[in-house]
Image 1 (cartoon, rainbow, N blue to C red):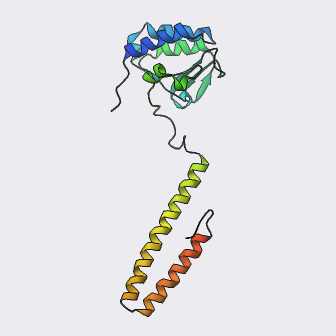
Image 2: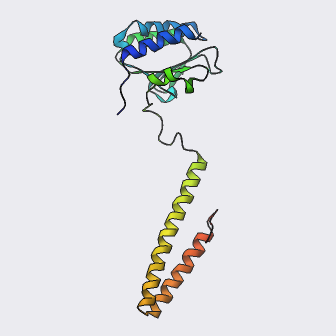
Image 3: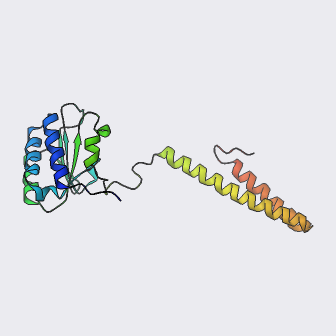
Length: 191
């Protein structure tokens, strides 16, 4: 079970971040200071990656990162106007707010990782590439082939044990068709 990040943990992290990094947009500093000074608001703040998928989120960037300086996302609308974003945050304090901070090596930073939460809005197949899908399909096809082959081999053995020539010939034909089908698939290697 994942331990929830407390408002105090978030507050400490934001204070540390503001002391160690300079943000590209000064309004970002205002927003973070506003959050630090409102513990009830911090309860609804969640640090995540890929904030663009969240219903309401902010991406802020420090000078040491190449990312865009500021983005505010709300229901698939995006703005770079930090002042409008600040007013929206202030007026809707009870709604969850997702924050993404971009700074040098943020994905390797342990303090940031300690306040990061899993983004519940990332699409299911976001981390799956087409190569992964192809490899999965090949593995599944091969597994299915192996299962069918072993099942047919067992049935062929049984037909031989029972000296059932008709059944043996029928199963042998099925086996040939199965091998032919599998040999036409890309990257198939017949033993």
